[in-house]
Length: 92
Image (tube, rainbow, N blue to C red):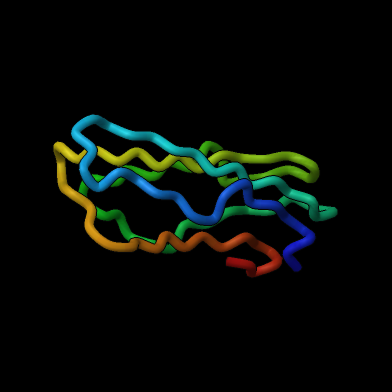
């Protein structure tokens, strides 16, 4: 199943001592023979904004997921998990 899509990075690290807004992106590439749809399952965390550029990923296309951490809104501590599901292959 994982040959049907590619994720540029599965682990992001944000500076716990950050004082400025920090943004990181993850690219999801569709290698499947049909369009995929990405659905977010995880709730928001204070201080972290998540945006999916496009929920529909055409065959041979890609989308980006942008994670923006603003330590001025809330400090993140420890590990956080953000779950996304790719449909119709139901992969996380």
